[in-house]
Amino acid sequence: MTDFAGSQYLIEIIYLIASALFILSLKWMSSPATARHGILAGEIGMVLAIAGTLLHHGIIDYKWIIIGLVLGTGIGIPLGMVQMTAVPQRTALSHAFGALCVTLVGTAEFYLRTPNVPKFMMSVLSMEVILGGLTFTGSLMAAGKLQELLPQRPITYKGQNLVNLLLFLVAVGSAVYLVLHPGARIFFPIIVGVSLIFGVLLVIPIGGADMPTVISLLNSYAGLSAAAMGFVLDSKLLIIAGALDGSSGLILSVIMSKAMNRSFSNVLFGAFGQVQASAAGEQEAKPVRSATPEEAAAILLAANKVVIVPGYGMAVAQAQHKVRELYDALTKKGVEVRFAIHPVAGRMPGHMNVLLAEADIPYDRLIEMDEINGDFPQTDVALIIGANDVTNPAARTDQSSPIFGMPILDVDKAHTVMVIKRGMSPGFAGIDNPLYYLERTLMLFGDAKQFVGAIVRELTGGH
Amino acid sequence: MKMDLLTSLYVFMLAGFIGFEVIRNITPLLHTPLMSLTNALDAIAVVGAIVLVGEKKSTFATVLGVIAIVAATSNVVGGFFITDRMLRMFKTSRPTKPQLTKP
Image (cartoon, rainbow over all chains, first blue to last red; front, top):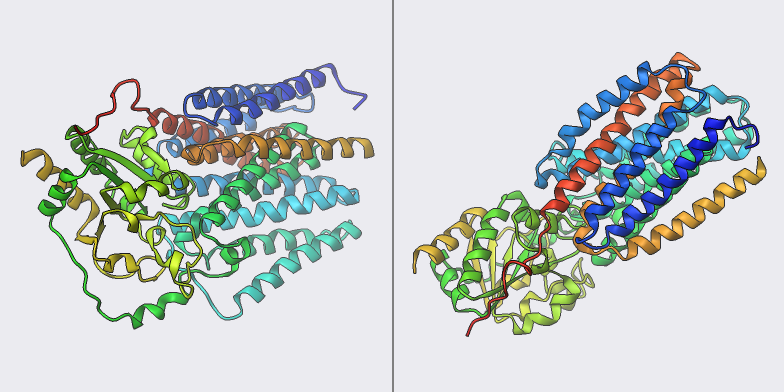
């Protein structure tokens, strides 16, 4: 730290400012009113840090740096313009890119420094490429599942967890050996290769409904690998950014797994959604009551308070704009409409909020689960659009249910429950929902977008 | 060298705690933009790749570094861009529409 060139001091000061701006950026994200300042702070910090880095005295050639920056910008712009329904897979893809960057830099640093790598340095370097490697391929798998290039159902085989455990042990074991014997360079490609394979195998057995937890966890890993890279390069800025990202991902994954009443290990190794396939066969055909769009419109119009519960099905059907029309039509008639948002509704944390905001629904109408659950007994109609497991009362009452204990939206306490659903087939996780057989429940069979559209036509044209 | 390392560990620990305290207070409403923002900030790893490429120590390192710059820059640009797009969509009903209730 003593023989810094003058420019190096300047760079370190710039990094210090950038670190402060990054922290402010996250702090301002706490409320929608200040959140856009947060982006600005982050952008200024980023531009400062990149500009400062370009002053680095060791840089002798700018050509390839500029080519890289231009190419990256060219790829980044379309990735920033994707549709809101595609945000989960875009997020997974960007976790993959971040991890790719970290893994590549780690690999290059190893071959530049070997065999003179001190023990601590080699340990963090291994951590960097293990986390980076598994996050890279794991995130690619997650993105593939979300984009439906890969099957969303869990892919499982016998002895899966044992294979995964062995792979992980091989990676860690090789890393330990390399730390103790820095000359054994052959172990480095083994660490990287095994981590890449491990990432694939870790994510393929995870079902689509568990994606919110998995994406958050991968977010956390991406952050931690960047922090490890900060240790390798002795960059406090990277350590700070990585630690912030790592803790953000960790908090989100804790919130997500709590919202499903499951532990991390259960999400990662439980292969949810596969066990229940057999149970679905046993159910006898119980009677349900269904209604037409005209009847649904009449019931909604007679209500004072309506709560709409959106789920992943709404996103799949791209029904959010029709839902907005429904909101407008009902609000005009003096009906109070609110939206109940379950933490794991959709495919990533906050997914439903973004979709509904995109459709111009004011965010103060979007109510979190804990806040709205007490209001259901005073709610006239609970309208469920494309959500299933998060409304399943079996989670409260049926100890044998696979989702027993999971916090749910208490829609069954509303005076009338209406469920828009394609058919009676069980939901993604294959769990039967007793809600559908209640006397107060009306099933509205059809495509979410078309059915909501039909209700809107009834509400606006009928009067 | 040893002291540097220790300082780095302190920085990591403190930043982790700050992260926990700051992010705990973020409304679930904004969890999706939060994730895309932290993703963009995390792509600060690009500075490591820039130095790696600029120092031109070996062809191998330069090639890996350029790919790393491309990947991280696309996260920076795409991440900030989409976060901003998302946040612009969040509007409140309070200033424009007074709340209606049925008589």
